[in-house]
Length: 399
Image 1 (cartoon, rainbow, N blue to C red):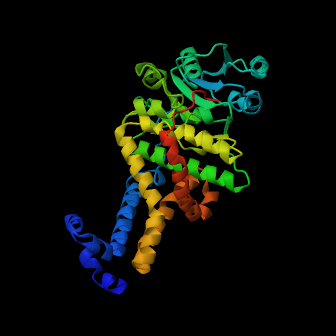
Image 2: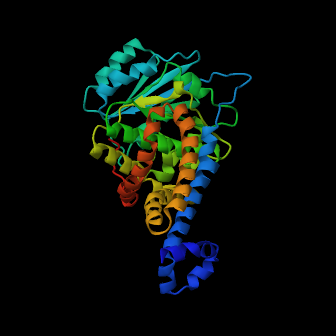
């Protein structure tokens, strides 16, 4: 029966979709193996579209050399709640930046109960550019990190804002210098890369793979003029764009989203740039347990429902076809023709390797490259696990 199906295969393959719709159940069952192969080819074609239209842009991306460089006055803003240990470890890396122009570092200490206040007082004695804002009252109507971040932005003296978290440290002393170099007269937003320290263990590699895969998408979309998010670990925008969009007022009711939802609202085709110079990366420690990572990612994905419809469609279609790819591939291989299926699979994987390697090299994640097939298969489970977060209400606290 299978041999007959394969022999007649290509005649059915080129049938009009309405012909398939008109088939009775027995005909559909007869041609089910071929229909699975047809579905596999469709899923693969959609994935290939994303690789060529979006991800290839990042693989080929090179920073434009400016004929003249300008140094802007910069305000670095860090929000912290009960982060004394991280402030001791990471804040000096921000305070010792080599930056020839005016800059300040603002730390908003949001109702901390630990020793953050005393740590900041001691650091302020050594670094006069450090400004500390002490918050001693919760904002009941504004959830999450948005209130302390808004206070920090209103306190900032300079137009260019550079945001990071207390658990992050810049990869070099040139973080401020090179992030602000991405600005020109039309630029209002600069998206950076927030990486994780490389540590032994499978969990660390999976977290870094997911971080790379997320960056692959949001940086590529930005290059295509469809910026939809940034990460608060390494993000810059102008103070004027924050006030022009009335801060976070459009989504104050959502606990998270101080980074991605604001960018989703404010980014346009013309006003957003990316900066992926290795000196501009920030580094933080990855979650040490599966439960902590799942809680972190669930909080992020719960904001996806508030993205613009086009972004939801594009991201959803990519995730759906990525989720279906390997199950449909296996079904097609077993029930139709493993030679044809393997040929399509091989072409897709070659294209993926060709595009992912230069991006991994640019983002300093190329040690993950040997595991790319394993991690790509893992994404089936990843999407299954975190799909439930789309229906969860975000937590009210940002810590």
